[in-house]
Image (cartoon, rainbow, N blue to C red; front, side, top):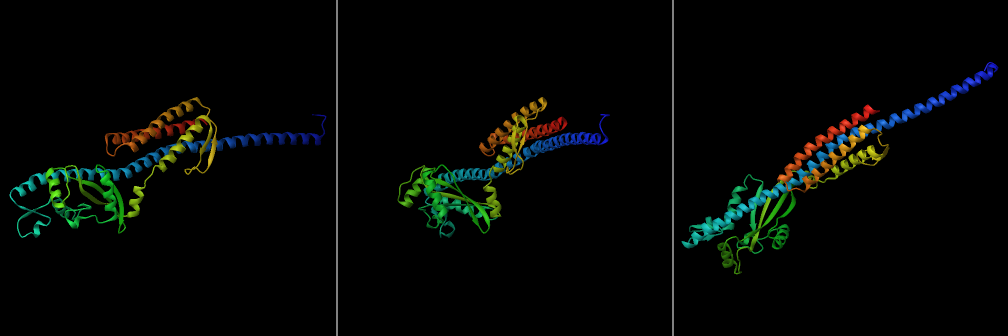
Length: 343
């Protein structure tokens, strides 16, 4: 080196310095890339905590929306059974007694010049007229061929329900209708002759033979579902799409952390990023634990969606989702912290 000229020494120093600068740049670039990648992984793992909350919210929202209409149907079915029992009891006690003492039976007892009792269907209608004042529920008994001409089928929906129930008398026909910016639910059930006296009365009045078990007409239960039709429609059209999206992002992110691969960067799953498998035994064990909890969570949501509203299975699934959601959130948060400590 001593034999080198000043110029050669300068050039050598510059070359060495340039080499060091290149090495330093490569090292800085490597670590900058590594920091950026680790930052993306941190963001992805941190997002998992938020996704557990989003999944729970979406699943419960869907179940509540679908449950409301099912719960409404359930209450109406119970009311329908009550009307059936009431009508049968009224027919066997009041109507039978009225016939035995020659007391008139009328569709308009108040308008008769002599004492009279109402027909069973008339009695039900009279009770409804008093009940619906101040109530959001309206009950009516109508028929394709009614004893009372005023109680015939009035709308296309009545006729559609009547045709359905003639073929499915043990089922319920439900439709939503919009009126004056409000959303209503119409639930129809078959009006079945449950006692011989009722069937005999219809036979005499209509000139057509009726027997116990025959459909005499249909019952319409109309109730207000929402004061705002748009809001009501949105609730009725609830779907699990938000839950399914959050579930996919959670699962793909967890899989990428475990074995490496692509995962969604945004919540709309429009952009993807790639993650290397996290090379850390503790983190890998944590991921396996998280996978097992996630599998349980997904099953609990399926149980909730498949269960009958307000049933024991439905309530159990709700409790399980709450418990498992907390576990997922806790484990996801710990995983993100463990990765942070590792890097």
